[in-house]
Image (cartoon, rainbow, N blue to C red):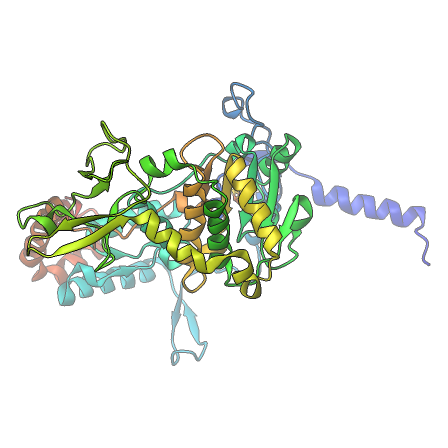
Amino acid sequence: MTSTSTDDMRSGEARYRARTEFDEVAWGSHCADCFPSNCRYHVFVKDGKVVREEIAGPRPDRLEPNGKFPDVYPQGCNKGAAWSAQLDAGDRLLRPLRRVGERGSGQWEEISWDVALDAVADGIIDAIEKYGPESIMREGTPEIVGTTAIERLIGMLGATSTDLNASIGDFAPGIHLTMGKSFLWHDEPAAFESELVLIWHSNPVYTYITFYHYFTEARYNGTEIVLLGPDVSPSHMHVDHHVPVRPGSDAALSLAMAQVIVEEGLVDEAFVRNQTDLSLLVRADTGRFLRARDIDPDGRDDQFFHIDQSGAVKEADRGNLLPDGYIPSLDGAAEVTLADGSVVAVRPLMVRMVDHLRAFRPEDVFESTGIAPETVRMLARKVAAKKTKVWMGMAANKAYHSDLYQRTMLLVLALTGNWGSPGRDSTTGPAARWMGGPSRGRRRDRASRVRRRSWRRSTRSTSSSCRSIRRCHRRSPRSTCCAPRGRAVAR
Ligand code: SF4
């Protein structure tokens, strides 16, 4: 055992004091790939360099005004607190480099910013001249502030930017397949209003540091928290139940929960009738929704049908989720005569889905999920009885066929009336909020086509002088000879 002398302690204290000395305190934040980004920090500066950071106190205007929820503070994370270490890190690139050897040879030379910017501008102009602006591709990335100017440039050029969520694997196709254009989202404090939170495909203690406290505060308030995931993650010790579902079997688990909800009569039928398409009629021969065009060649393609409680076929209201004058049946069947004179059996989608679920009793999925049937039943009953939120982690977006995870999780919530009201919702996590879609290069509404044609005309009219404009730019970036081109690009 070693002992620490008083001198050692003093020198250690002196070193610590020297390390934490500062000349001034400034405001700072970080705006790269994190969530929510831009947390408020005090930045301590010495000799013009940041020496450390500390989370700043609450902003009075951001405190929860009615005292209903805990406030967000302290808002920050330990990754952020270490951020400034990168400013002077030895491997940080501070000057542009140009490859001088074979690709992969690792040979580079340092060049000036002017040379680098000219090279990029040359490349952009060459690409526009040869192939058109769509040939310029920007890979979508999630930094928030940093991308604003880049996106503007891409938009003005008419170039293409990839969907950032698709690029980084945060796109949640299952949610769009289920909800259409809408996307599910929630306020983080709303966990406080849930009675049950299923953390599924997520390890928020590590990955959602700034907001994880809402889960612990909700739990303190009485909310039950369940973690569904195969590993003993750092989040697992803070939950009421850990359900170690085998990797890749989440959809089977959700379907087994749905089967229990149906079998035990736990379905919120009013919600299902009015808020889902499970009440719409499906043709027995094709498995597709019955449409007005099937019955009448002049009928609409987006006109669907119900059967009412007496078994009569009714046109579903296309403008209102609540049918006027009848209650759509979730059961039964009917026959309709199609435009070609043939007769086809139709039944509500709910009937078809219940048939499908028969193969997913908890006992049937035990081998694939590894979850005991009684645990599946317990979970299903809890979801049906409580205001439930599913916190779908980003990992739910990244597996092969993970759209099936999302769709089946949403099915469980739909059957139990668990979306659209306080405490009942689902989300796939932070990046979904940004939803940066493909940029103008791929959006082809009429206005953008007109702009694009105009841009092409202006490009053609100026392309012959592109080279001279480029030379002119080099000589004088503000030269008036570039102004017409600048205006054309900016339209
Ligand atoms: S989440 Fe972390 S890295 Fe992002 S701004 Fe907040 S403290 Fe900084």
